[in-house]
Length: 436
Ligand code: SDX
Image (tube, rainbow, N blue to C red):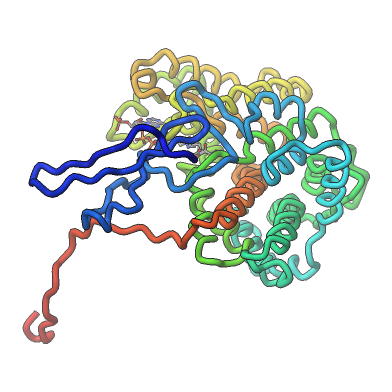
């Protein structure tokens, strides 16, 4: 970042001395006012619950233009990556900052695809869960438990340890997600196969059985890989900020990523795809498209507490570019599976059409986000609704790792420790219980 010519001056109406604050600019996007010395100079904090106006760090990984609806990974538009690259290329890009050359690409693919097995003990860890445990509860446990198996890559301040942990996490997440699924349906785990692609391997571990060979459908394989690309990173969202804050204490990479998984689970964040699919199924049960108008009235009624899941975004005040690509992927998958008339897809498109013409949504700049169509395409592939967020976590692991590594490599980073505006009791004395 570089010092801008512009400067901010903070003045106070009570005559306290004004304070000059430096302004920094990045390569694109809003400038920032550096308030690091504010408390020292004024004895006051800033106040920004939800961090609507706060930059927590400087980063060179992902840029979002919310007004234009643009998303860039290391400068490359998501539309180009989703159509011209695969997920492992995208992982390489997010981790190293450049797309791999042919030899680098082959090496990286081979490195990841030959580390997909997990320690045999992991399967016994799963046995502690009920068969109907939510996969996100299982995954939060499994990923945190990885630190117990890989002591040789837990020193977060050792770049080599971080690299090894990154490859292990990217390589093993599909295996763990598939194990969580198989455990839930009571089927045997499928061991990974090194000759398959990253997405093909995941599909086989999910839907293959020891009873017969599993043939990967190339259209579904490509769709799965694209779903991974679209979810790989997204600037300083809630789960990424959680990983950064968790990692800033010096804990091991597996624990920091497990914290990200736990945060992603929430319905306002990564859990929205599951919530969106459940919403669509509810409307379908109540009458489908004919009931959309009534449902939208509920959404617009503040007292109903009903939200149009998969719509709205803290940063995008335009169409989420990932939602457009996800809709295209939906079309491809439904056509391949002969489900063009999927009622939920029709219902989602009707909801979108109505919302985009409705003043409530237009005024609030509410558009479909990545979660609006992702559930429909995953359901068509055969993925259970409860596993949607687990797949989001699988794909986002590389983004969390890249952001964590970027923070740790920043000489200025410190343990994150926000302050507060205290509104509770000031000092008072304990009275004997007889006098309370
Ligand atoms: C993800 O941050 C990221 O980048 C996240 C993510 C990523 O890749 O990491 O993009 C992934 O989490 C996508 C978002 C998934 N969540 C959902 O789809 C859940 C539904 N969406 C909302 O909960 C909401 O839009 C949020 C949480 C996504 C954003 O909330 P904000 O920025 O805090 O906005 P807000 O709640 O203050 O909403 C502004 C207004 C409010 O109305 P008013 O008080 O101004 O009258 O819009 C309304 C909200 O009530 N509103 C909605 C709505 N979203 C916002 N009303 C109905 N349905 C919705 N979905």
